[in-house]
Image (spheres, protein in one colour):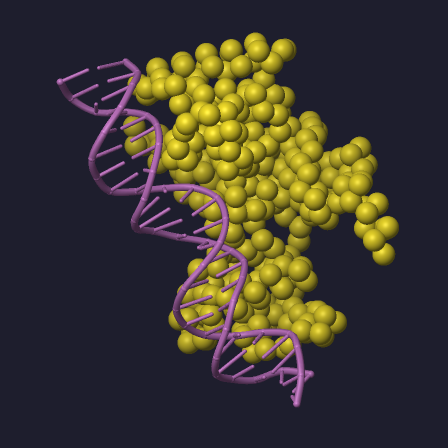
Length: 154
Length: 154
DNA sequence: ATAGTTGCAAAAGCTTTGCAGTATG
DNA sequence: CATACTGCAAAGCTTTTGCAACTAT
């Protein structure tokens, strides 16, 4: 699916969500959604705030946080805590389900996909009587480039 | 394995770690290790700090943070970020490898175990050329009791 | 003796909140 | 035109840091 189409559809979904919940369709909210869906990869609130500022889009940090929460609630954005104190986010519409592998050395985040995670979820849910809503699987390790650097550094 | 023995062995491992790294064996460090291994379940820094204070063990927050970092480094304690801004910890020696399922409603944390996670790790490591150090798999959902409450609340 | 550690308090960093002004429905 | 939303700044929380005093080696 091409990027423009994805942005359009995400915008539509956001509108539906706002209307259903009697929330207002403010330009700030759409600007933030747009910015997120134009980016690739993961970002934190500060990076998002900076991008917006750079583009002369004047939104306050409060609005960024507020809007991110809305977007998380309607599943257009996913929130991650990769072991840091600062949350990371990524767009999630039209994105296949995936998990993350994080380099403990350089912080690089790579996505991967394994169907077996679904089986684990089903089994755990049944065994422990939980209704699973979402999951987070993060593998932490050293990426190829960092392994090379470490060897060389000696 | 009984609790006293585990504490003894964890203490021994900590001593080895401190000696190997030319760090000092201070009473505060051992007091914190002891407190952690006497507790069950997960805890945050504030809960740990409070327990210590309650027992008239006088340590500062700075020392708690410092010592927790050491314990994480020598694998006697594991650090978790269950989607909150506050990190959670748990003892990890003599504990079988396990993952977590967290109730999004009441915050309860339950442990579970599935060998398939090992296969996923191996495959992702090979595919993406990462050397995996550790992982974190968290399932978020609604636990049995909270499901009942929700139904009743209507 | 001499560093590594501690405690305290201040500072830093991320996130939330209060409030007055603004703009949406 | 009622009130949800915004921006700003202040406040709140968790975590880190600086420094003088202390103590393990």
